[in-house]
Amino acid sequence: MAQNTLKRLYVDELRDIYDAEKQLIKALPEMAEAATSRELRSGFEKHLEQTKEHAKRLEQIFGELGEKPAGKKCKAMQGLVAEGSEMIEEDFEGEVKDAGLISAAQRVEHYEIAAYGTVRNFATVLGEQNAVSLLEKTLHEEKETDEALTELSDGINAEAASHESEEQVKERPTTNTKAKAARSR
Image 1 (cartoon, rainbow, N blue to C red):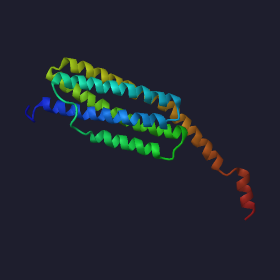
Image 2: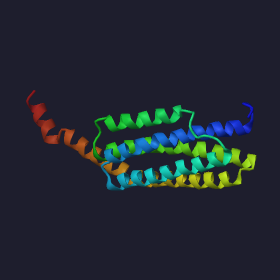
Image 3: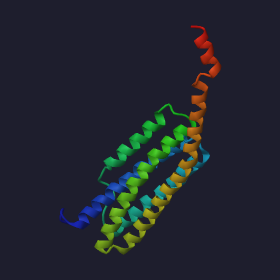
Image 4: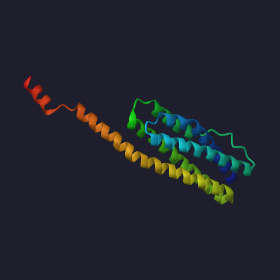
């Protein structure tokens, strides 16, 4: 196969996203473990199972193309996973940590949505109808995951902000404390 064909680019992009999925299969259990919200933990665990299925679908596409899935490292996902790992290691706690994990997860989802949309379009142009169907299914699941993360973030972010407001109130000197400080001068 010539190196300058759309099919070659398509296979190359499929290899990239396959590696991305394999990286996520390793990263999602760590994110689930770091989550404090049961809902978020459950969401990460559900997405892990979906991600395993996404990798299987890609393997099926590679089989139909007579290609091997390995051979490319997804540097973008490597960076996104590294950022997620940094978030896990930060000293944030509770809902604030969960808000950070959702942020990292949504960056991953947006990357995957872009990648799957691109390879689905390549498959369409190349007449790879079964691949189009498989890629469309995965793309739909990635969008659903992003929407679920957005819904979760609404509650978690509000909870994190309410704790922040409570902390600010605790740190703020009361009127009596201000008056006493002024009198003691």
